[in-house]
Length: 74
Image 1 (cartoon, rainbow, N blue to C red):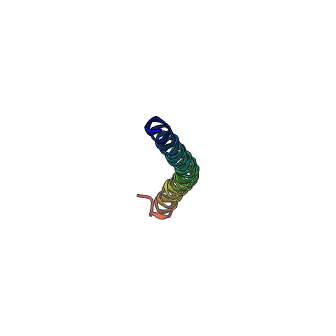
Image 2: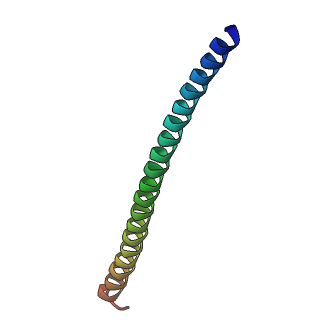
């Protein structure tokens, strides 16, 4: 009789552990999804930054060229 009670208790413990494992796997999947979203956002921001930096450099070079062209010749 005592063995049956122990077996039932262990079976209940297994059920609880399996539910915990399921919950942890669900949390991991959610975290991985959020990580992918954050990586995509990071890549988009980095791409924008590089484009704006390139445009800034090009405009600065253009302004310098215009200033040189406007200087009086000696």
